[in-house]
Amino acid sequence: EHARLLTPRLVDPAQVRFARTDRTQVEVDAADARIGAVLVNPRLVPDVLTVGVQIVDGQFANVVRVEALSDQRAESIRAAVAPDHVVVLPGTRRGGCPESRGS
Image (cartoon, rainbow, N blue to C red; front, side, top):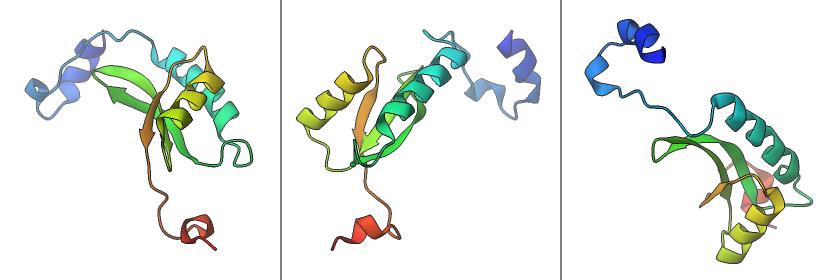
């Protein structure tokens, strides 16, 4: 259905592939809201930079970017949001934030 509706609007349809995903966008967005509610609290999880949705290996994924990422930190984040699944990636705080300049 998506392909039928979207293909006529594409500039170069040959460069687009439509495929079924494991989870719907609604399911991914609901998980994103739950994950954000747990992780976006600087006092509880100070190193989390972003929580969002990306396409990873052709599937919707809930992605968390973390400053000063370690295996232990990634595992604690995964445990905190279980049973939701997250992909934890390293991130860097952008300039302009007082926290990024240190004391």
